[in-house]
Length: 64
Image (cartoon, rainbow, N blue to C red; front, top):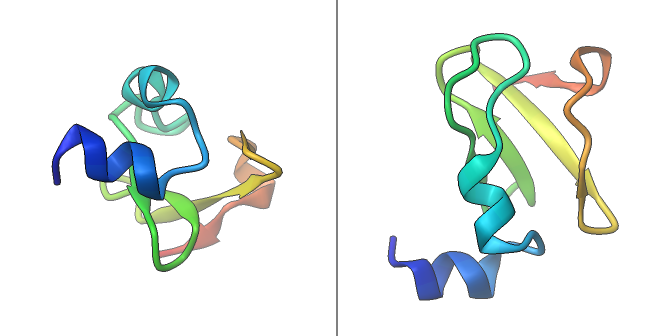
C-alpha cells in the first residue's frame, strides 16, 4: 500500500502511524481500513481508533 493510500484511508496522521507500535509486542501496527482500526499481527490484536485517536490500551483491544 502506498503512502498516499494510507493517508487517504487512515484517519491518523501518516507520520504518527509510522511511529505507533503495539503496546504488547513493540512491533509496528498497521491500519486496516475495513475494520477502521489498528492491527498488531504479532499479538493478534485489533486496537480501536476513536475520533482519530488510537486507543492502545490492552483492555480495549479485541482478538484479531
